[in-house]
Length: 293
Image 1 (cartoon, one colour):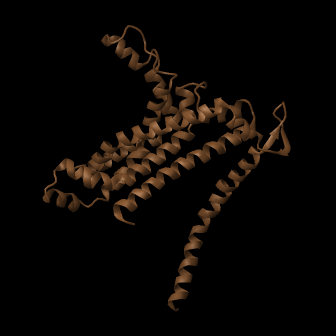
Image 2 (cartoon, one colour; image 1 turned 135 degrees about the vertical axis):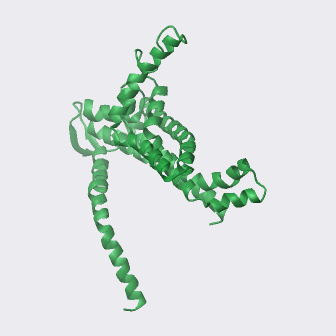
Image 3 (tube, rainbow, N blue to C red; image 1 turned 60 degrees about the vertical axis):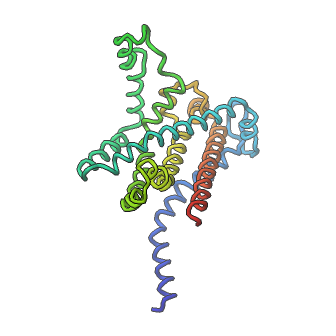
């Protein structure tokens, strides 16, 4: 068999291996997305019955409503703040994972990191309610130590939502950063220090730039997860928090306005994808400027 025929056979075999995953994504991702888009264009009557007519009335209502625009803006800044704090806290944890003295300690740290992901988000969120409630552990400790005379309002606000978000999503930021740190050759840092750079300069000029892709990857993952989460803010912040996922939940489950819920979902999806695309574009531009490709 000549080289072109062998390449074609290899390509066909690769597509054959990829076809089950593609079929799965088409059936369970692309088709539901198209059905959701079609549903978002349907009209409803005064009783919220879905009509057979199509229009952009749902999207017009969303972008002309200060409440929905405010919820979209709040969702974005809460997600960005969560991603920022996750990356900030994840870097030292990732550094500790990579620089562990031996394989046993490294394995133990990875188990500790991944173990929260094996627990339901609802259970972890209720644990935060136990900690932050007026009669919870934190308030009881503060009162017992004399730092306050009455319980503090630690629940049902956006600060509590961000704290719970960070705890739930921190592993998704640690793992990409740890991967980037693990790919840096030790000889590279030794060469930097041999050439006269100190530890701080080596970290700032060598290690930090090389781990920026991992940091950005973790940032984007956490941002996307936080933007689409509704269980944590619903339980920690309450149903009155101006977040778009909570509005989608209310329209779909409580009010049963399915076209509006579909339109809100697609709006959140497009905005989240646009932010992730912009962040990815900044990363590629930085890589071209730094590495010249």
